[in-house]
Image 1 (spheres, one colour):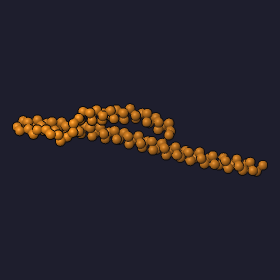
Image 2 (spheres, rainbow, N blue to C red):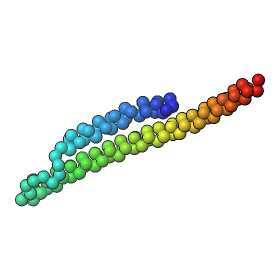
Image 3 (cartoon, rainbow, N blue to C red):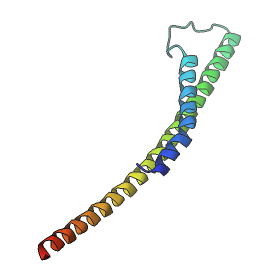
Image 4 (tube, helix red, strand yellow):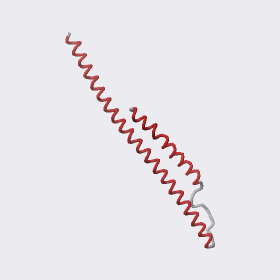
Length: 114
C-alpha cells in the first residue's frame, strides 16, 4: 500500500468516524420499535397529535437514512482510492520482479561466460 493511500485513509478517517458516531447516536435516539401496542386516539386533536408525532419520527428516520448514505459514500470513496493504490502497487511489484529476473539472467550469463 502506497504512502498516498495511507495518507488518504488518515485524512478521511475522522470524517468516517464522525459519520459512524452520528449513526450510533441516531440509533440510540430512535429507540423503540415501530408498531407497538399504542392506543388509537379517539378525538380529532388526539389524531392530529399522533400525526405530528409520526411526522417527527419520519423526519428522524429520513435524517438517519441521509447519515447512512453519507457514510456509505465516504467508505466507497476510500475503497476506490485503496483499490487504485493496490493496482499501482501490483504494477510496481511486477516491474520489480521483471527487473530482478533480467538481473538474475544477466548474472547467470556473466558467471557462465567466464
